[in-house]
Length: 99
Image (cartoon, rainbow, N blue to C red; front, side, top):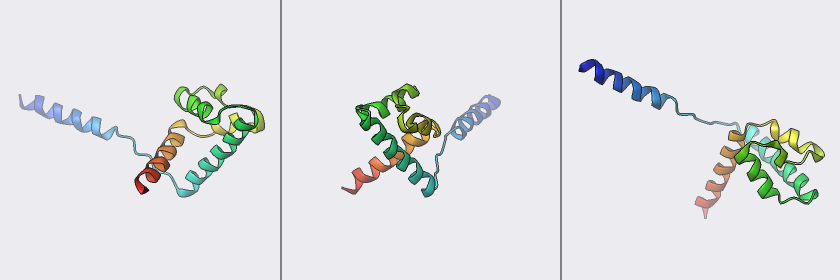
């Protein structure tokens, strides 16, 4: 019975160790935000709703949501979607809690 408890504790620790922690340098964060601004403008220029298109890409991973115009699709594909989401959520929550 003691071995069963040990295995259970080890399993719980293993699960806890699977937590992913995202950390970014300020430079990387600014680079992603700057590129999102560029992508936003490229989408707007082509007549798309940038918020819907970027959200569609982030949720689905389908790069077809982003126009190839001005190299926007290639640019957004150069970043990990989770990185982009983390930075957007961080900025939104920071703004929300400031007010």
